[in-house]
Amino acid sequence: MDIVVLDSAEQSADIGAERVVEVFRDQPEGVIGLATGSSPQPLYAALAAQVRDGADFSRLRAFALDEYVGIPVDHPESYHSIIRRDVVEPLGLDASRVRVPDGLADDIDGAARVYDEAIGSAGGIDLQILGIGTNGHMGFNEPGSSLTSRTRRARLTEATRRANARFFDSYDDVPEFCVTQGIGTILDAKRLLVVANGVHKARAVAAALEGDVSAACPASALQLHPRVTVLLDAAAGSSLRSLEHYRHAGAHLISPGR
Ligand code: GLP
Image (cartoon, rainbow, N blue to C red; front, side, top):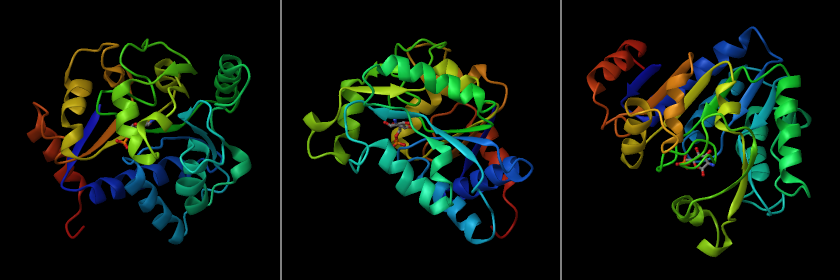
């Protein structure tokens, strides 16, 4: 894993955006995997700045990681809405080339299988953006998710529902179920770009990157992938045993004056 600790979330976002631009420069019709959550927000803002400077993402295909089950797609907190608002519009993606798992299908698991097949037919995901939940979840793969799981319906933990309650009127309004790309689906992507910021992520980040590979910490599956870049701000990296090494990597990436 290429683990890089930077001084701030803004630096991390700038470096992440450069990576994204680099990956798709030679494949403007490539496939990007999109994450929701607050972690990738600075990265999307940095990518929007790249677009203003001339980057063109309009021919990319995109697949989102997850969606709640049972809320209308036009609900402001559905991942359909968030992806459209935070990614499709500011980055100039073509909405007809962007897919989000279907949380309203009569046969959710059938629709989830079709989703995995669509990723395969698109040639696989070239670069998957990921965050890490405070309980070590990745996408909505909660602790206990099989490390070979595929896109499927899953139950959210109380911790995740409480963490996401801030986006809804109350805890009870947070859906109990979701559709999420599986850990196995995520590991099929050709490259993974993981972002985490803030001291509230430090424990999960350390467990994921330096702990045992275990379904108890789904993000520990990152250790099984050959091409992972992890961009952390100093607070999110603060519990890592090899912090100095990762900070050194960060310092060497930053050109003077950045
Ligand atoms: C959410 C999303 C995940 C995200 C994670 C962390 O519930 N389903 O894809 O990575 O939880 O969210 P945040 O970045 O807001 O901390």
